[in-house]
Amino acid sequence: MQQDQQLDHPQSTPQSAPQSGGGSSTGARRSRWFHPRRRLIGGALALALTAGGGAAAYGFGLFSDIGDPMSFGRVQETANDVTDADTGTGGAVNGVRLPTGPRAVFERSGRLPDGTEIGKTTLVGKKSGFTGDVWVWAPKEYNDPRYDKSAFPVLIALPGGRGYPTNYWGTGPGLGLQQAVIDGVKSGKSLPFLLVMPVINADTKHHFDGSDIPGQPKMGTWMADDVPDFVKANFRTFTSRDGWAFMGSSSGGFGAFKHVLKYPDRFKAVIASGVDFVPDSPLWKGDVKAMDENNPEKLAEKLIKAGGPDVYINFQIGTKESGRDRAEKFMRDYTKGPVHTRLQVIQDGEHNGKSYVRGMREGSLEWISKVLLPPTPGPSASTSPGTGPATASATTPATAPAPVSAAR
Image 1 (cartoon, rainbow, N blue to C red):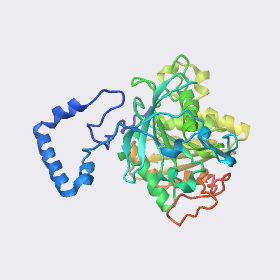
Image 2: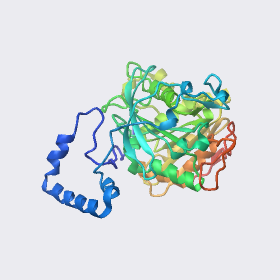
Image 3: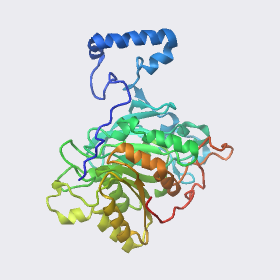
């Protein structure tokens, strides 16, 4: 199992922000404030307040609201709250699944320059029995009235490294994943994905291979069932698999990659970066049958034999990391029938999150945006070029990608 270099990216929010599950940090803030270096910072803040007012103070994080309760507005409006006649009993309308509830309780864990926010909640998995944190980011288009009856595509983002108790895609906006989506929407190269970022391991000591290892916490059920059920409870989603995908790096890439092959009826595509290709946790204890049930190579063989449904796999490999030979071998052996593959080579890319986000900007994000369903504006809405997300039929992806793209 490769070790992701980007285990925990530094928070982009002030270090004095309240942390989840902790008590008040007021005393801690006060004691640190009188450190000699803090006096200098305090003087700078006073100057900023005098010169720039509240905006400057907010820039310094003086009035930080990180850790405060938040919601995603109308995004979390449940089917029971909607009274429009065209929603009928609150079920699907033109492929759109309205949130079923119950609503999750979020606290603010980050904020992007465009005003969008990252929220964190604790999910009690009903099917897995595992309890862990999940981070969510919704693009600004979510609350745009033009799309208030539209579903949005979901991208479940899995981290590498420990993957517990945090997910660095959610706790480290500085890695640039959310901003890559924002910029891609503006340029017309990306759909406005709903990013869902759960923990992937049950503790800091073991890798669980994103699987239900016998006798261990059911991390496979957590990611394949509990996390999607949580998303459906709180957000407008597509009823078909055409609106659901994974991405992940290192061990998280393995989990993402494996889930698309294991559950092709639920998930359509994956961006798998610096990925492992076989289950290798020592927790398997040599259980070959259980390992084979979670082995991407075995799962690809099974899917090819079954004849579908089609899945789309985008590997990302940096030129400064190992693994390209394994990716190319998988592509040679299993790119047939319903299994479609692509390789994004990241020049000077290393085994870390920032390199993988660069690869997404350079092609992978545009690729997966052509595989999945886009949100669609209401019949009376009009979208000027470059001001909104790409749109297409509510039942057909915008453009079918080439089954196999040559390595770059």
